[in-house]
Image (cartoon, rainbow, N blue to C red):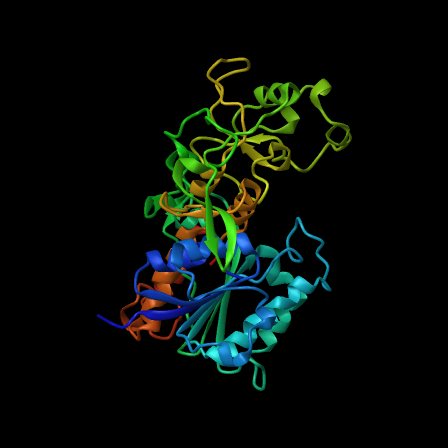
Length: 400
C-alpha cells in the first residue's frame, strides 16, 4: 500500500473538506488551522486535537509549517459573496495570501482552494492567477479552475462553488460530474441528482426538543458545548402563530409570493421581484437550494420542510429544517460529531464544504498525487480532457 497522502487544511471550519478527503481513503491530515473556537473543536472531535491549530493563521510562524503533499482550504468568502459586502478592501479577502504563504513553505504537490462562485470574478482571483506567472509566488504551479455544482457529485443540494486546483506535477483537470438533473441528455449516462428525500426522509417530523443536550467537552484547554451527533441535532424552534400561518400557505417550491397580503411584511409587500426563495418550501424530489448559515430562519431562504399536502392539512410539517437535516443535506455522515451552541453549529454547517463534493475532488486528484495519472479516470497523463470526451460535452451542453 502507498504511504498516506499528507494533507494540511487551512480555514478548516468544522472539517467538511477534510471529511471528504478522509472518506476518499489514503489521505492523512497532519495540520489544520481554524480561528473559530467551536468550529476548531468540532474539527478536533472528528479528526484529532494534536494536529489542530486553533487561532489566527497569520500568527503561525513559517518554521512551524510542515511539508505536505497537499493543501486544501477555503479562505473566508464573505467579501466575495452575493450576501456579503462585496468590498474589495474587506480584510477577509486578503487571507488567501496566508494560504499562499503556507503553499510556499509546505511545497505541496497539489493545492485545492474552495470559495463562492463570485471569487472567480474578483480582483483577488486575478492576483492569484498572476502569482503562477514567472517570478510569482506560485511559480511552478499550474492552475485549473471552474464552478462545480454540488448536486452534480451526489450532494442533495444545488450549491455552486468555485474550485481552484494548483499543481506542480502536471496540470490537473476538474473532476467529471457523476450525477445529472433528471430528464436531461446527460441523465442517460449519469446517476440522477440526489434529492431532499434521499437525505432526510424518515427523520421524525416533529422534533421533541428545542435545545441541545446539556453536555460539555474540553478542547484546547477550554470547555465547549458538545459533543453532539445524530438526533442530538434534531432540534426545533418555537415559531409564533403568525409564522405558523405563513408557513401553512407555502406549497413545495413556493415562497413569499404565495402569502396573502395580510401576512406580508412591509419589505416583501414593497419588493415585487427578486428574493424568490425567501419563505420558501423545499421539494421532496429535488435537491435543496444552498444551505446557508441561517437555514433555521425561513425568512432567509427556502428552508421550510418539504412535507405539505394542502392548506390546513393536519399532516403538513410547518417548520424550518433542523440542524440535523441541514447537516444531512450538506452530506455529513450521521456519525459526524459537533461542538458549540445550536447557533454556532448552524454556522459551521452552512459554511462547510459538502463532504461528498470534497470526496469527489479527493478521488479525482489522488492518482496524480500517487503518480498514477496515466490510469486516472480523466484518461490523460497531461491533465487534458480527451478529445472524444470534449466532443461529448459539447453535444450535451456541458459547461466544462
